[in-house]
Every structure is written in structure tokens, then in C-alpha cells.
Length: 198
Image (cartoon, rainbow, N blue to C red; front, side, top):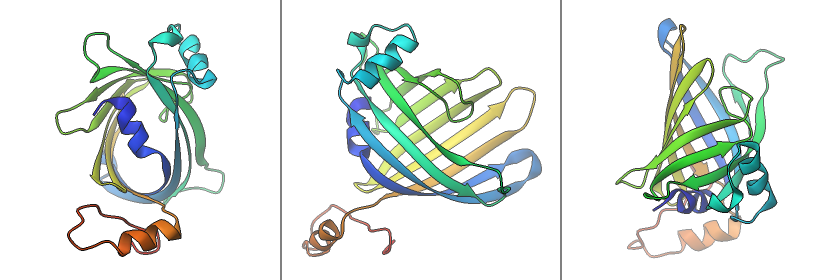
């Protein structure tokens, strides 16, 4: 599975439950968020725009994704806002399609255009390594089931503290899909989850 196939499998709406460990303080913080992923074709104008923003020829992109999120964390103050959106453009390495660059109009750790390096490992997990001006992050995404995605991330601030997070993300499926899934024979290997039933 390459990075574009990973995003195609990730299309839809997800509910994410996160546990973040603030390592220097030895404290953990819980949070929830709703994430929507829309796959973009290689010739989508949004993909071309991100490539041009980073000085990359648009024809080198394999496609991309539009992602938006809205969440809340346990220690939030009234004015804190964990919502946003970004566009990804996937630019595979010319010699190895399992690695390449992931271009974004904004990062998660810093709200600036950023280019990360990605690798799809032998287990089909997507690893994203991003270097910012003040920190670096490593994220690993993988599917535990067709509608359950897991994510780990570590963020290291240069000269400061570090955090480590673990997320379980469950795809929101329509009621009709859920009814069809639960009527499948027990021998069916696919697992389906609804938000209310998980």
C-alpha cells in the first residue's frame, strides 16, 4: 500500500480519542476530536496550489487530501481552539513509491506551510516525519480494522519539553451501513463500528 492508497482508505469522518503524555510534567491529558478526510485527485487544483506553494512541479504529485478537524482537550482554557483544516499533496520519491514528501499548507504543531517526509513501512503503516523551526514530530498511522485507525505521535521541542500521544480513531458510518455490517455472517473478517456502539 502506498501513501495515496492509505489516504483513500482514510476517507470519511472519524471520531478520535486521544491520550497525550506531557513527559517533563509526568502528567497525561485526554481529548476528543472529529476529523474529516477527503481524498483529492492528482489533478485537483488544491493539490497543484500546495505544490506551487512549496516550489514543486504539480505533475509530480500522486494526489492528496483535504483534512479538517475540531476537538477539545482536558486542560483547555476558554479561549483555546483545537480546530482547523489543511490540504496535503503527496509527492512520491521517483525511485521508491513507498516514501516521499508530504506537502501541507499548514502543520499541526506550527501554523505555517510545511513539508514532511513520509514512509509506508512493511506493515502498511504510514510514518510522517516533520521538522519545524522550533520542534520536530514523528507520527505513525495504521489500521487495526477497516474502520478503526490508530495513531501515535511524539513532539520534541528544541530546548524544551516533549509530548507523546496515542489516538484511537473510529470511522463514523451511516446507519444503513451499520445495519448491513451487523447482518453479515460471523465468519466475515471485516469489522465495522458505529460511534454509538463503540
